[in-house]
Image 1: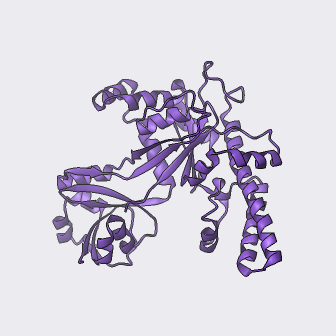
Image 2: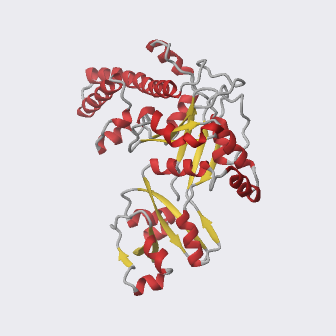
Length: 371
C-alpha cells in the first residue's frame, strides 16, 4: 500500500491560502470567505517526476503513475500575539482547526506578500517578516501549553505510582519546554529513536517540517529568489521556503492543458511555479523515490530514507514482500543512459540485491518473488 503524504496549508486570514490550494491542486474551492470555515478543503496532487516520464519512453509504458501529496486547506489562524498564556490555553479547547493541523504530516505556511486594498490584512499592513515570526510563535505557544499539561499529569503520576518510564518522559518534556521558552521550535531539537516513539502520539506543531510559501504580487515574481532569501535566510532539513503568485497560478491551474502552455509561454514561464512548490514540499519530507518500469506502467514509489528492499517490496504488495527472492536493481542514471534492462545487464550495471539492501533514491527495481 502506497505511503500517504499530507501537508496542512495554514496561514493568517486573508493570506491567500485557498487561492494557493486551488493553484496547487487545480481545485475550485471558494475563496474570500474561507478564513472562518470549519471543514477543510482536501485534494490530492501528483509530485512532478521526470524520471517516470523517461522510463515510460524507454519501456513504451501504457500508464505513468506518480507519487502524490494530499493538501488540506485548514481554516485561517488568528495571531495570538496579544493573547495571554492562560487565555490561549482556554481558547485551545474550542479551536477545532488545531486538530486538523496536528493530523498533517507537515505544514505549508502561506505568508502574504501581496498588497490589495480590496483584501485588508488582519494586522492592518503587509509585513511578511512579522507574520512569519507570529505564526512560528503561535505554533510554539500551542505546543508549550500542551507540554505544560503533560508535565502536570506526569508529576501527578510519579507521586501516585513512580515509574522509570514516566521519569524519562518528564525529563524529555522539561527539555522541550525549556527549548520552547527560549523561542525555538521543536523541529530544531534532536531526538533519539526512543524519544520519537514517545512523541508520536502528541503531534507537536512546531516539530513538523514546514515549507513557508510567499504569496506574491504579479510584479514581485521576478524578485522571488531575493524575497525568499530575505524572509527565510536560514532553511534546513525541516524548514524550507518557496514562492508563487497565487492569483496567477490559480488562473493557470484552471485552464485546459492545451491553453495552459500558451498562457505560460505568453507569461515567459517554462512551467507553472506550482510544480516547483509541490516538488519542494515533497523534498522537505525527507523521502526518497524508487521506481518500477514495464510495458504496463512506469511508476514512482515514495518511501522513507532507510527502507530496505524488503520494506519497499511491501509498498507494492504484501505478496511480493512475503515471497521476496531478489531485487534486480539498476540506478536510473544507468537506465537512462543505456535504455533497458538487457543493455544494463550486459554492461554489468544490473545488481541482484537481497532483503537487507538499503534502497537509494533513483533505484529502478524489478522484484523477483514466489508465493
